[in-house]
Length: 184
Image 1 (tube, one colour):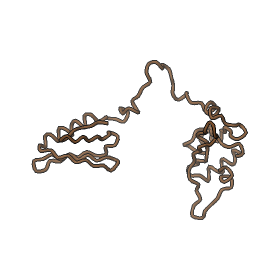
Image 2 (tube, rainbow, N blue to C red):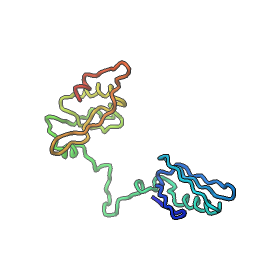
Image 3 (cartoon, rainbow, N blue to C red):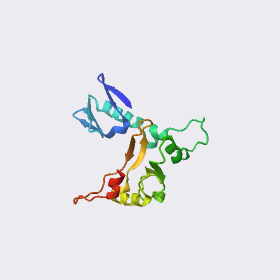
């Protein structure tokens, strides 16, 4: 977040929220308008168009030229972690065991192998044991983009779970899916 001062009024505008910056010369004055993607608008009037143009030039110099230069994208592991490949750090089986999930209630399934059911879910899913892979395929067809309910988190003591899914496609006729209702 960068800040600038104008007549002792401090205005802070994060670069990621900048939508549009306009500068106009009008009646010997400079008018700088900064619009944000959060529907904010800051208007600055300068007695001299040169001063307003100087500030506009400075804002453009300080702005990242490419999103990869922003902090979240430009962070690199320190040299203390050589050879660490972040893509291989996650293991679904280890994560499943970390949930302390009872094998009699939940299971891992490869029903989404090759992203056959849902292209936005991982290939291995955590689902209730009572539901078969065939039923999962039926449920995926009933849900938007195939996003069937799957467990994403489990409370360590009270065993409450959080599952993610998309809206069911009931349509105007109020379609139903017995397998989906049984899963929920």
